[in-house]
Image 1 (cartoon, rainbow, N blue to C red):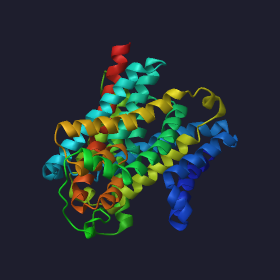
Image 2: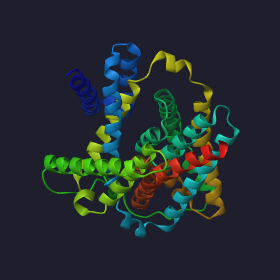
Image 3: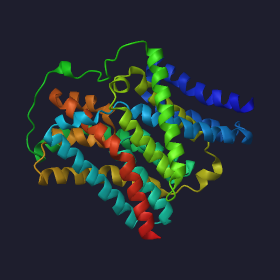
Image 4: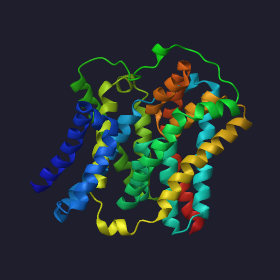
Length: 376
C-alpha cells in the first residue's frame, strides 16, 4: 500500500506542474521540465521522502522513461526523410559530427575517471543530437548516477537558455555574414503547431498508444535477457528505441494525437523522480567537470558546426535551424524559424531534429562504450 501511495505521488506532482504551466504565465515561462526538476530536488533535499520509498522511486524512474521513449518515437516517419531538403540533411549530419568530435575531445582532455568521462560524453552526444528523452535513455543505459545526471541537466538548462538567446538575437546577423545566403520561402502561416491531425477519441488513442508502448517495452526487456553478451540495460534501451521507430511506421500510431503528449508527461515524471533521489552527500561529490562538459560541448559544437558548414557550402539559415534542432530539440525550430523570417525552413528543420532524436541513443551509447573499451 505504501508503494502505491508513493507511485501516485510521483505521478500526481508532474501532472499538477503541467496544469500549473498552462494556468499561470510565470509557470509556463519556466516550463514543466524545470519545474519538475526543481520540485523533485526540493523533495529529495528536504529529507521528507523515507528510505522505504526508494525502491518505488527507482521503479517509477525506469518505467516512465521506458514508456516515454516509444511514445515519442511513434511521431517519427522514417519514409519522410526522403523529402528532407539537401542542405538541411547535410547541416544536420554536420551538427552530429561536430557534437561527437567535441564530446570525444572533452573525454580525452578532461580529468577524472574514464567511467565518469565516458558517461558525460554519452550524455552530451545524446542530448545534443536528440533531446531530453535521449538524455534520460543514456542515463539508464550507462548507469549514470542520479547526482551526475541532475548536475548535467541543471547546467544544460542554464547554458541552453544562453545558447537559445544568442541564436535568436546575434546569431542571424553573424552567420548570415559568414555563411552563404539562404533562399527565403514560404509564408508566416506555415509556422504553426506541427502535431499530427489525427482522428478519434483522445482517451481511446491514449490507451492504444500506452498499450503499444507497453508492448514495445515488454518485448525489449524479454529479448534483452536472451542476448548473451553486453549490458542488459544497454540492449533494453536500444531495443525500445528500435521498436518505437518501427511503431512510427504504422499510420495509426504515427497519427496518434495522444502519444506525444503522454510521452512528454512521462518525461516530466522521469525528471521529477530522478531529482527526488538527490541528497546532500551526492552534491558534495560534484565537480566542475560537468559544467565544463556542457559549456564546451554546447558552444564548441556550435563553432565547429559553423566551420564545417562553411567548408561544405551550407547556407546560413540551414546551419542555424539544424544547430537548434540538434542542440535544443525539434520543439524549438518554429521559434527560430520566426526569428529568421524564413518559414520555408520549418518542415526541414523539424524533420532534421527528428532524425537526430532517432539516432541519438544509438550514437551516444556506442561512442561511450567504445571510449570505455579503449580506456580500459
